[in-house]
Amino acid sequence: MSKVKETVLEINLTHLTHNYTYLKSKLDSKVKLLAVVKAAGYGSDAITIAKHLEKIGADYFAVAYVSEGITLRKAGVKTPILVLHPQPVNFSALIEYNLEPSIYSPRIIREFIKVAEAENQKDYPVHVKFNTGLNRLGFWENDVDYIISCLHQTNAIKVKSLFSHLAASEDHNEKKFTMSQVNSFKKITSDIINKLGYTPILHQCNTSGILNYPEAHFDMVRAGIGLYGYGNDADYDTHLKPIASLKSIISQIHTLEPGETLGYNRAFVSNGYTKTATIPIGHADGIGRQYGNRKGFFTINGNKAYIIGNVCMDMVMVDITDIDCKEGDEVIIFDNISSASIIAESAGTISYELLTAISPRVKRVIIDNN
Image 1 (tube, rainbow, N blue to C red):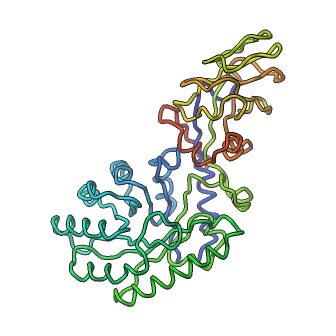
Image 2 (cartoon, one colour):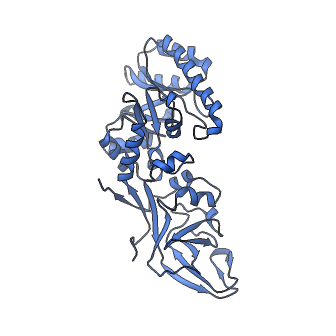
Image 3 (cartoon, rainbow, N blue to C red):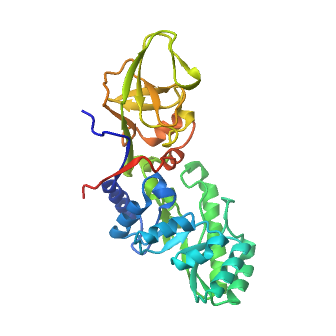
């Protein structure tokens, strides 16, 4: 009998607690843990994830944009929230909702000081980001004197943390490069701390950095908790558990005769008698068209059911010719066994893209066995 009656994303808070506890066990007791809950908690539910982590002791949260932080504040989240990629147009709202900005360029520090001064702020907490090799966002080493000059001209802001981001901490073949990033960060932070006259929080490790580079834990680490169990590092699969399972049902079963076609553009042509199942999930729900035409598959009663034809907006069709199943049976898109990584790789992408693409119209179901 089917365990679900419609397409749902199950969010397992028991697994979330397990992962949080496991990662905390890897840290010195004085090291803080910042949970990154951007992109709707990596495709699950940011409010549910953040509230649970707040309850069990997370020290900090991070989001990508101001709007995400505002959503958490309106939901009652009190824990400090770092906004990783704020834009000047949102600085007033950021201050209104007591969010803390990443300051990553000369333009951003100038603009934020201007807004903070206009709003009569004093020692507003900011987090200064340095680029040590990811080459995405961040000040350079030779910007230190400029940053100090800006800080000395105002009392509107105060540096809460100094941070950077590792580019390849999950890849053991990139240890030399990663250690060059760590050493660069140490050099930069030593210089700026001497000139600041006080020591902010230091953080550089992401999730795989926590596991692979304990020497770089510094004062705080960052972890994308919604992604645990989906990474490439072997330690992810051994110790960390996926918190999300995407499930659906078989809506209808058809049998195609030889030469019959299926779906838009008649993309699938039956070479013989083919039994197909229609599943109520499509590219509007996050299953992109790249999974069609036998690239991706779902799991039905323990068997792989390959997607045939083009993925539709609200439906996909799968080949169940050799699978014993019936209408109403459960369909696993991904879960603990048939992982999001495996499904994503079948279509030439990564689990992160699959997870964060799951649309809001997919019903979220919370599981908590604590």
